[in-house]
Image (cartoon, rainbow, N blue to C red; front, side, top):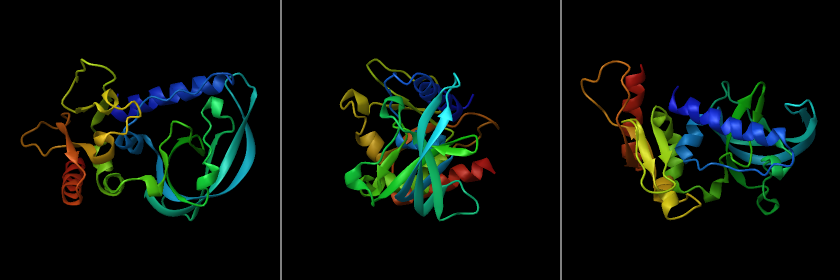
Length: 231
């Protein structure tokens, strides 16, 4: 199973368990922005402009309140062909089951939104990468537009306590949480786990991935190299 598939399975299991029990508290595992980008089906920038109450049945057939947010889209980074100006994302109405609500004080601002598909619906949760665009640093913006997509064959592995170890060349150890439990340290803010160009590797072999600074020239070069290997 690929790094992206296994991570999505774990994240989905956490959300499904929460949705199955309306009294359960929402708990989110740390997620590097590159991992969030690779796991997302759609990555857009836009404004929350409307909300509609909904309901969906949970795994026990019980009706659970949801809401549908209307997004006025200003930029599409991933997904949606052909592009559209308006998108809709759904989320549980209750924060206790990982429902996401944009802060009232920030409504009207542009947001970066990474959503996943559940059937025909696009969904987000408290655990999703949804940030006011003004709070996304320039290095992460370069990652979103230039680099993260070229690193989806790599896996960012959170280190919660020492010692930590990697199990393969395609992994990068993420240690921000050792110093800051918000996981918003330099590796999340300024680095991407990207494959290095290799010579003589057999077809289908795992890439050799390392942390790279998200400088515009380097990120663009590594993305082109990753794309050429995938052709």
